[in-house]
Amino acid sequence: MNTAAGNNAASQEPTLEDLVQDWEYFPDLAEKWDIPVTRVHNMVSEGRLLTAKVGERHARAVPALFLVEDGPLEPLKGTISVLRDARFSDDEAIRWLYTSDESLPGRPIDALREGRKTEIRRRAQALAW
Image (cartoon, rainbow, N blue to C red):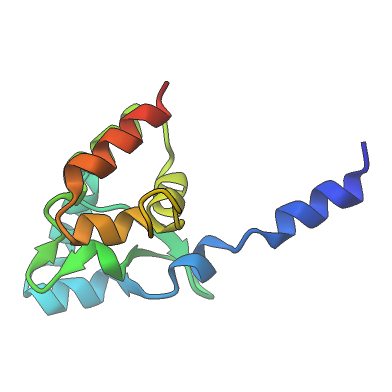
């Protein structure tokens, strides 16, 4: 096996940080929503939000498209649950939600924001099989 070719293919995939691009950090969310930062942590624990460590300090942050004016995007919670049932890590779930799918067309996160949660959850559920 040619290891250089394998490394080259892996390096062509964008980093999660580059794929998402727009992130919100926990203290900023707490301030924006006028809640304690511990409540943001609870939203993650409850499966309402996914996070990744980003930036120079590798601080936990939430993809901006997972958010609306007053909290997490509502259809996200059920979708996170289905992706976790399919044994996706948070990073893998974020990557899946942000990766364009020609059969949609577009990205699953955009379809969720458009109100197409049933279609996205069905697709996520199929990933477990």
